[in-house]
Image 1 (cartoon, one colour):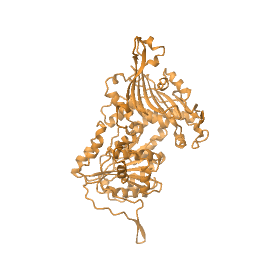
Image 2 (tube, rainbow, N blue to C red):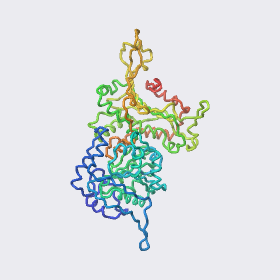
Image 3 (tube, rainbow, N blue to C red):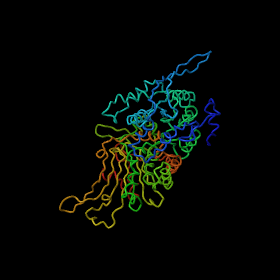
Length: 596
């Protein structure tokens, strides 16, 4: 949809809203319909100039420095229920009086609205991540956080709910209660429906009270089911978008169920948003070891020459959880393990692993390379995939339930809780190399890792010392994403002594032992990136299209043919079919053969 003309945008700022004149959200970072004082230009350019190559350690200091010299932050208390004033037989909304503060027009503020604030994700991840950023001085000097949901709640009740999930891990030696109190004073609540224009108009009025005369930048985090994404975006774009700054929207997965539904969702969102305003979040891209993947590859000379079919025999991407759905099977049963984990988390990691060297660390250059490699991947079919579903298991005095024992799961459900797949990339670098994925619930342990198995040494002089199983002696690079983050390289080494005895040992970078600083949660990094306008770790629409093109054919076959998943006991290593799939490509799963 073409952008409005400048004349239209100027007139809109003073024109009352009507459905026929509904504006789109202002394009992010550019083309804002406002007058800009010359004195504001340097600081705003500085904000946009923060590059993705900047060291993480300096990010937060820069964020604070952008506001040096600004007036002191002012917290404006706003009650949830604004008083109604009766005037000449009609009711009108009366806003609380705000002290006249001398605020420069070049100052900016960020208003963060968590849509779906009463939900589990908001309580467990989003609010704690925002608090951690606040403790690290990573949030702008002027900011306001609003919770928005249908639940009836006061500001005090929201703060009480949030406080139960906040931790002061970054300020263990400082006054935790003081930091928490300062943060909670910035948090407010507005109750409303996700499809109600009037409720979002009321939210807009409250946000303006806090923003004052500052340049208002607004971030909406949609922590809500995907079937109401479009309603929330329509209402927020119509009546709660920034009029003189940027507006951005974070959208949580799932992004559709297949290529068709994903394209329909993207088309609907783009009725109200520009592509550069949509931040499709995959929290796995914010994990420390995933972000370190490109650093490991592109800044270490020893790895990049080996990163091809010439030296790598296979690559394994493994995700396992040691628990089942545990009463939360309603959402999961609608999507299954392939849509929930493989099509997004694991495929995104694979794209970062296998892409060509980007021109720069600019977000678009990186995402361009990811799209290229995704388009080189063969679409999956039934022969390339194994699916499974966990059954009950008795372990001494403990009985572990089957997936279908979960009361939130429909009786007789065929939704897979486990899947393994073999993906091939048709390009010069990776042709013939199997990329094996597996993901599952209720397995033996909890882990997420990348395992790179290198080729055997041709004419190995020590083959007799290594035994008959050369796979046990192959070099293997393991990148453990979680838990207990680590990078280690498995090598063959001589055991000290007079005899020639070889051992399979690790060169180990264990993060907890090497670095004293606690690793930040993925949501902290991604929220900070969204505030700064850094899109490198978010998914672009053409990237999403390419990802769904790989998995949609096999998903349709599974659904249309009602494929029965292979059973595996709760707490086991998964169905036997996964081992047969790996053996077909002359591969052994690394997490099973080494026990690491």
